[in-house]
Every structure is written in structure tokens, then in C-alpha cells.
Length: 121
Length: 107
Image (tube, rainbow over all chains, first blue to last red; front, side, top):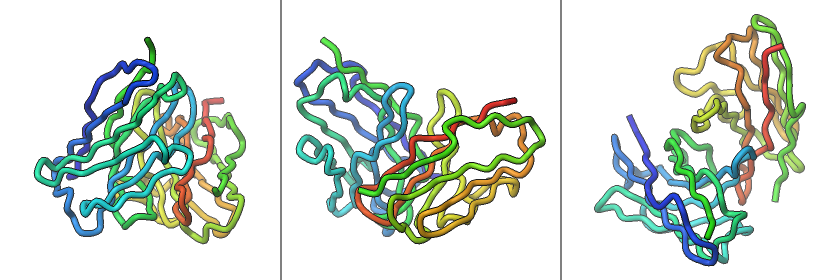
């Protein structure tokens, strides 16, 4: 059974770079039809898709964040990562990683438990 | 960008009754629509994909319908564990977008 776990700093200073890693267990990140995504949720608010990646490195980003986002994959560690630069308080959110099991345009299942990142000096 | 609008924002229903949640897309998404349930302190859980296909392990009291721009999630007989926030998501076009959520609360 596929499981995902986010990790990374819970506090980031304004203007710096947010960096998170998602570790996949119970399956290979190189699974043929799987994409891998990042989604965030500001406290008390709804869900926003950040971007998705295939094990080959192909990426798709939300245009609203594209200029600041980089998603990468490390197949040797069965991990994928998120970098968001020039963060502000508006980037404070629960960040989820998730599996996209049926290609690039698809739903997400399962999700990691989420990690709270606070942007504050 | 396709805007997903859910209604109502909050729905109050008694246990054992039926709940009907709506999701509207700003343009057609075909049947490329998923529903998620989120409980406090938990990650979203996939309920429905393809507008009407239940995900693995989801009880039969959950059903989805619709296509194009109008979608419905129906919970036929509410159990205590069903009170949560529900989100729809379209995956027909980039960027992937979610509705703002419907909070289902106990009446």
C-alpha cells in the first residue's frame, strides 16, 4: 500500500526558500503511470494545486506559482521535492504531497499527512 | 483556469438523512471530476473519481453524478463519521483546480 510522508522545516523566513521532501513507501516512484503532486492548504482555507512531476522529470506547475516553484524527483531515494522561493506570509500553509495514479491530469490518492510551513521572521 | 464553485458553503443535516452537495465548473470538464472528504487534522481522502466511480473502500452510501459543468455528491444516509468538509476537483485542464469546499455539519 502506497504511503507518502512530507518532511522539511516548519518555519521559513520571508524572502527565503521553502524546501520540502516527500518520501514514497510501499511502491516505486518510477511506477509507470504515476505522477506525483504537491497541494497546499492555507489555515482554514481550501486546497490549491502547486504542481506535479513524473519520474522522468516532466513537470507541470500552477501558473499562479510557476515563477517561484521547482519540483524535482530523486528515483534513487524514492523521493520528490518542492522548492518555493521568495516566500511571504501568504505561503503559510499545510503542504501535502500526493500520488496521481492515472497520468498527469488526474485525481490524487493517497495523500501524505501534510506538514505545516509557517513563513515568519 | 477552470473555477469550481461548491454549494452550499455549509450544509446542516441530521444523522440518517440524505445530504446533497453540488459542484459547478466554469466550463465543461466532461466526467473528469473527483470528490474528497477532509476531517479536522487529516489529509483529504478520495471518495469519487470519474464523477461517479467510488474509490476503493468507500461505502456505497456515497454516490456521485453529473457531467459537463454540474456535479452532485450524495450521501444517502448520514453516519456520524460523515460530518466533514467535502471538496470537488477537476482534472480536465491545467491547472488542476479545487472547489472551495462544503462543510457538512450535524443538525
